[in-house]
Amino acid sequence: MHTSLLLDCIDEFLTFDHIHPTLSSLEAFPAFLGMIVMSFAMYWWYQEQTYLNLTLLKKERHFREHTFTDYVTGLYSARYMEKQINNEIGMLESKDKPFCVAMFDLNAYSQFCFKYGIAKGEELLRNTGQLITLHTRGCDLTCRYAGDKFVVLFPDTSYKTAHTITGRVCEAAKKHYQYDDDLTTISAMTLSTACIEISSQTANSGVFEQLISLLQQNKQAA
Image (cartoon, rainbow, N blue to C red; front, top):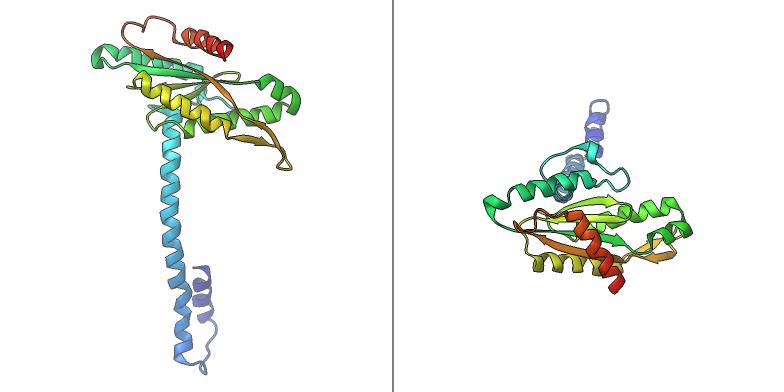
């Protein structure tokens, strides 16, 4: 497109009477080619925006509050997740559909930071948050709980479905590697997980406390 516009600009200052008319018609060819390229570019730009909006939906869900944002991972914090869980609990009586909450814990995160440094540790946290977000559904909400722990809310989801999704995330984490600046593999990502179903009978119990207790039991059993 820039080439075509440049040729149009040059035409205002220069004339070539001896050039064959057929050759002068080639001036329009860059514009034709540029429009084709721009059409493909607009299509892929739309696809990119669709993916970004889906990712943003997983991070923000119903509303945006930047005071609840975790600056390391870009996800929302435990305070935001707590508000969303309370909203789901408040709607249990009206819709009578249970929902699930899962917690993920990075294994050996403190040893990783001690060996490779805090910067690499924060990069690992960002990658973990992106991996969890990528392997969950569009209606699910991913937040960073604290330290190396992440929490995912599965609205209107049975325990069986939520357990399947958490297993898929853990399997994907095993295939994800961290790399050094020279692209040398330094560590594989492994996650421990705990998942619970919240219904009208269990809504009064502390969700995070249940998850942490179950997570510790699962790590000891492993």
